[in-house]
Amino acid sequence: MTERAAIAGLGMSEIGKVYGHKASDFASIAVHNAVADAGLALSDVDGLIVSSGIGSGVNVSLAAKMGLTDLNLLTSMQAFGSTAAQMVQYAAMAVQSGMAQTIAIVWADDPLKENVGSGAVYRASSSKAPSGWWGLMATSGITSQNTHYALAAQRHMAAYGTTNDHFGAIAVAQREWAALNPLAQLRTPITLADYHASRWIVEPFHLYDCCLVSNGAVALVITSLERAQALAQPPVEVLGWAQSHPGRPVMRNDDFGLVSGAARSGPAALRMADTSVDEIDLVEIYDCYTFTAMITVEDYGFCAKGEGGPFLAEAGRLGPGGSFAMNTGGGELSGYYLWGMTPLSEAVIQVRGQAGERQVARHDRAMVSGNGGTLDHHATLVLGTV
Image 1 (cartoon, one colour):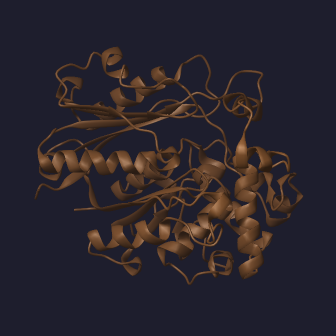
Image 2 (tube, rainbow, N blue to C red; image 1 turned 45 degrees about the horizontal axis):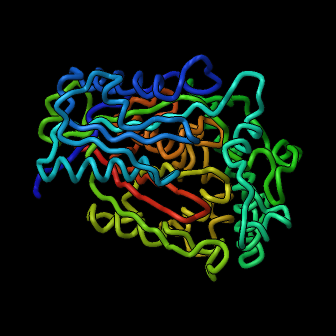
């Protein structure tokens, strides 16, 4: 399999507090936009990989909804926040093998409802009473991703001296990037004092440690590099990829909160791309929480284990003009939250050189992460220019 794969199209629906559409509608819009962005017609698509968020009903029936026929590849995937990067990986392998030539991948969700708080929507999606070990945890109030990740963050803080100031530096810097992104939901600058003044969600997380909730969809078109070079947009080559699924949930994981799947998938993806962290120009990290971004940076090898907090909080490191270009669209904390499509879409925009006011000067190599569950699944991509 010597064919090289590339991302040739990027399409989005409206994103954010957008009502009146189902997730399948958002998905259809995003796919149409991605195909048009590549300079192709829907009839050119011979593969479709779909995924959705919280029970939103996006599945393989989307192909019929869009009028796609005679497909060589059609499947639905669900690996939580690692799904988007995984979809790119499988699409790239399908292109390499000749199974399909032009594959659309799409992720969509519609959790936000008018006059209903986002927390209520998420609680309703998991209303079944927990049992067994999870029931025991629930008696202590450990019932949500917020509380699970809070435990992980507390473990890291106890082991390595990580502080809320370290987390706050990430939140402040990503808001600075979001201020330059017209797609971002939160664009008003914040200070470290604002971060500390924001309400507690669950210790050690303040409001600004936690990701947004968004409606919308993002789609990509993957084809061969040779074909992409003849299409409408600068091709973004898929240089390397890997996954890691530790299989050690909270109840029996000695490394919980200290090491994530990024420690395996990151180096593996870099080896496949025949590159190193020293050659990476920008990183787009899955940041459902500030803590998640920090531990991923550690595990990818940009700093030593346990030093992620001081590394990212160092003056001049993060934010526009900083020495470490991370989450340049505001990420999921301030930009928008479309699971792994948030970091992936921003990486494509940056590598293409189409980020406008927030465009980084060096953008030949990008590293993208996807994180699923409570550090249960991880997928990594290395993307680059030709």
